[in-house]
Length: 629
Image 1: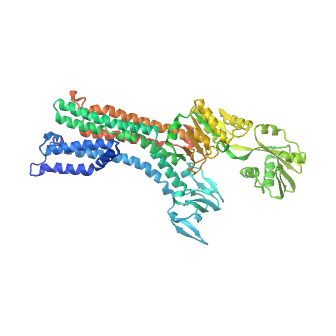
Image 2: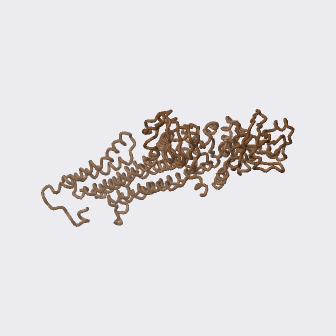
Image 3: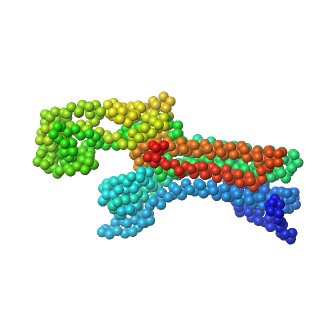
């Protein structure tokens, strides 16, 4: 064929006629090796597919060409050049497929590249340079400003703002100081710290994340099982179509065309694109999610998230920060609010009580000048007493007022109805004001709930707190419905109640106290888990504690499903159109599909699927970007 197209033929000399068979055989054995070995593997596994179809096609062309070269068949069946082109095109398509899959693996492997090449291990009064692999649990390492933590551990000296974006997806640095955990690969951005190693090698968080994503990519899902079955059906469809094509063209008296059309059908019907449609999307989605701080443990969870119409949030630690904070200051006439806060913080500065820490933190955040205190005393259930600037300052609850005969401020009743903790501040025995403390609502919670409502998702809150507390939080955040006074062991029954109402429920909790509820939900999401990938009850783990990350999971699920559907429709539609053309259905009007064009179309169908899946990489899963969509 090519000699006719080019108007050129090889010189007529001895042995010249064997150049094509020899080179064609080399091409078949060497270039066709990936397909031939793949075909054998599919036969052994009793799972016929793409490799077997390609193997059959090039083998038929190879046998027919040798038959023509040996004079056993018509010389028109000499397909050596076509065979070589066919194999080259197939190899190109196969290389593009493998490259696309390799990109997801290399992107995930780049997590391991976050580890520094060297670590500074403390050895007595000096430091020695060692490889991170040589570190052991209990070793202390120095992490200098701008340096990466070589292994998981806890800060034993110093304080630094840590860039944890590669783990949590949060771009804002987090302050870590004595006793705080740090993760391998994170960066000390502003100052140096010393870290005592607590986990090395395969026990580190990075290694756990890599294992988790790999398992998710290798696990099966409904869409994947459907694609696998479709690919299996397509094999038999192609085989039957090829057989019918061979019979029909032979019956009409064109055996040469029968061979050409049969080979073209086998080539063009390869379920290459169909086999790639789902796995490539899943690989990119799970890798992309991991980089955004979303860890997919169960592919079914990711697949189901697109159908969720109700998100059930646990209140404490999810919508709220899970720790008390000063939310209001009410001074009496003649007392300044900042002065009241400074006096209370001074009196509480030597206390380790969580409420005391909240008051001191609030004063620090307001940059107040907190005076020194002396004569500190603490009384359980009553409060604290200290001398500040020559005045006796007391901070406490209702028992303090009973002991001193002080009068509660009028606003206390309203605060109490909202479920807040009320502390009064007394100066020299007189009530100087009151502080309102409550579990502080995360600033991102309202954004998350508004964004869920915009997507027609109902938001429900569940809490063990009293009705008044739950109602106050629900009203402030615009929550549709709430369950109050629910014990941890009863949360699963509330999830079941929503499911019985026909709701598809995603439960968002801490992964520990909420384990039964997470398991009961259609999708269990553990939030604020950091690098704990061992939460068995959750299908999805959010490394950060930002509730907006739930939107990231929904967006990823919907985007992944769209790509899967597009790829499946393309792969199926391509075969429905191309196979009849390859069989020669339009031959009566003079149109036949050349064998080489069939190979190009098959490869192009794979390229289209691969490129379409790659578009998922453009999806921005950061909470700020997700809520804007």
